Amino acid sequence: MNSVVAMEEEYKIFNDNVHGHIKVYPLCQKIINTSLFKRLKDIMQLGVLHEVFPTGNHSRFEHSLGVMHLARRLCLKLGATEEDTALVEVAGLCHDLGHGPYSHLWENFVRSANPGANWEHEESSFALFKLILEERPEIKSLISENDLLFIKELICGGDKGKLKAGLYPYSARGPDKFYLYEIISNKVTGLDVDKMDYLLRDADALKINLKWELERFLEAGEPKLMDFPWGQDKNQKDENQNGADAKAPIIVKRIAVRDKVVKNLQHLFSDRVDLHANAYQHKTVKMFDLMYTDMWVLADRHIHVMGTKGPLTLSQACQDETALARLTDGWLNGQIGNSATEELKPAREMLRRIQHRRIYQLVGHVEVESLPDQAAAYEKSLKDFANLPEDQLPGKLHSSDLAVAKISVDMGQGRRNPVEKALFYEKGKGGCHLVSPHKLKKICPAIIQDQSLYVFCRSEDKKVVKEAEVIVKTWFAKRGWLKDTEPKNAKKPKISN
Image (cartoon, rainbow, N blue to C red; front, side, top):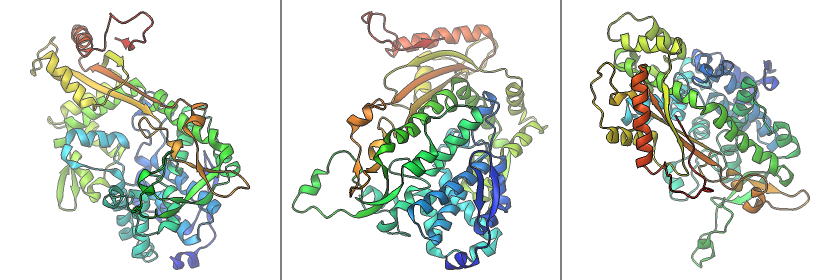
């Protein structure tokens, strides 16, 4: 990468609505000025959230610029070399290249329509980055094979086999540079610049106030590098390390911040909870998720996307980066809305229904302490219980009328508080430490995980909707979610129809 440093010329200034003036250096300028990167201008950052919150209509393009900007800021704080900083910037810029139309919702569609795909957008992001290198050979000439592997590891993570075996999972950079892997996609705590940017950007668009402060983290937090045993990110010591045959742990360089910003750090994850509860997983957003997914399933086999080896269906396109690169929100809506074929008529009618806001009806809602299964498993349970006909007869409830959505809100690591894994240090003292769960309980509940099921009826017939409400309430009772024998002061599940 010395060639990149040598050719660095004066940066350009972009004006960003969240971060103000940001510097864009030549390597990133070259990537931005490609057709594959500019595709992100037509990929909604927040999926279909704009159907409920009209101002939530920004794209993956500006988010990627924001991640690039914050990546450089944090690298400079930590004293990273210019070579490493440039590559981490590139990874931040390109980490979301592989998203399909409407971002994460496309992943839900692929799981529904093509269960065997086992697709993750991160792998596609790196595949599309390699296509950028083919589109712009002058970029490719600046990046060595080892640096290409480094960018891949920054975007996709390390070797999963090594990680499972408890070994250091990265090859492009050693333990002394592990901290670089915490900047874009932090696999240990989830504290990374990707999350920092999207929280700030989404909250700004939705006019939702955050408690977390970026500048307090970067300035008052004084991020610095600390030695820490690899894999020891829990608040209890590994008993195996006390054995006579225990191997000495690998010492890695990790990012630590001042202990005085513990509360600010906790606010980052608490704000994530609030955004999920009040926006990302709002019940009406989940309903529109279902409507859009249903529309794409109806269109799946009737719209073909050209890949490297021939045409693919919509749900297969993610398996070929050339086909995926053709998919954008606008292209997809145009293929459905402007079609005239009989095969696409059901999808066109669904699009018209969305546009006219003839929405699915909520016929049941339950909040319970534990919902361990996926929404599809609960939907199957409901349909097995209802034993409804598959045939769509006018005025009659049938199996496909019922749809179940699951809402699960947490801090990003299930029932675990990710701040328990973060490193802190005291000014003027050596070493770093993990904050005690007891201290965190004073700031935030030990467990934040709210789960709910929403059941919707696709039919627009009021009689059918009423029939669905009765069946769903009976199913809730059968599952033990409706109990009239509990003590008066017991907390009951919240039910609404």
